[in-house]
Image (cartoon, rainbow, N blue to C red; front, side, top):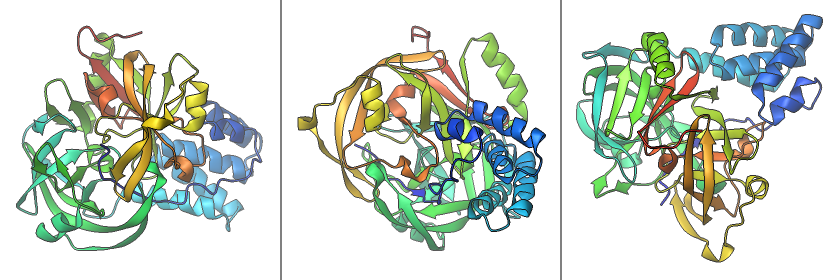
Length: 390
C-alpha cells in the first residue's frame, strides 16, 4: 500500500513557450543536451533571456546555486516581468536556506542510524524537540514531514503552505513549520523546516509520526543501506573520497538532478528501452516502479485493468493497477520482475515542465545501499553480491 505523503506544490507546470533550440531537449528531460544548447546560445547572444533562464534552471537542477543565481538574475534584468524567472530565483533563495537552519553537530562520523524495520519501508527512531518520534525514510518528502497529531505532540507550530500533490495526482492542504532540534544517533540538527501533512500513518505495527526526507538527507552524504538496515550520514566534505571508493567497487553511479526543493531525478530504462527521466521517491511501500500511460506503452507493458484497486495516499484513495516490469535499470544496476503501479486517474508529474516517465521506489532499491551525493550530484547504488549489474 502506498504511504501517505505530500509534496508541496510549486508552480512548475507553466513552462516557457519554446523559443530557443535547447527547449526541446529540456522538455524531454535531456538536461545535459539542453545545457549545452543553452550555453552555446548565451555565448552567441548574452542578451538572450530565454537561454539564460534555461541555463540557470539546469544549473539549479545540478545544485550549482551560485552560477544559477548569476544567470537567472541576468535573465530577470532582461525580462523583469517573467514569473518563471522569479520562481526559479525563489528556489535559489530556498536552497540557500534561512539563517539558523540546519545547524549540524556530528557526535560521530559517520553517524549510523539503525532501522526499526526495513519493510514495508525503513523506520528510524529520532527525538524531535526532546520527544521520541518514529520517522520513515522517504525522498518523496521534504526535510521532515509530520502528521498533524505528531506536530501538536512534538511542539511544532505550523501555518498554511498551500496545496500538496499526492499519489495519483490527488491534492490536499499542507502546512509548514520549524523544528527546534532533531536528534538521531550520532548527530544533532537544529532549525529543521517541517511540513505538516494530512492523515495518520501506521506501518509494520508502529505508529509513524512522519517522514525524514530529501532536504534533511541533502545536508549530508546520505546512504540508505537496505542490506544492513541502517541510515548512514557522513559529512558532505567526504564526497570525493566516497566517489573514489565507489568507482573502485564498480558501484552504479548516475547523475542526479534536484528540482524545486526536494524532487530527485535520474535517467533510467525499463525493459531495455531508451533512458527516460524518473523521480527517485523511496517512500512507496511494496512499489518498485510507477509508470505513466505513455511509459507503459513505450515499454510494452499492458496492465490488467480488471486488477485495479484503491491505494490510500495522503489525499485519500487513488485507483491503481499493479503490473510487473521485466527489467528496470539505473546505470549499471538492474533488477528483474520489478513490482509496479499505474494510476488510472492521473499521476503527480504534471507539475513539472519536462516529461517524467515515472518513479523508482523502495522495492527497486531493496537489495542495495543507496547513496545520495549532493556534492557530486550523483546517485550511487552499491548492490549486494549476486545482484545483476549490466
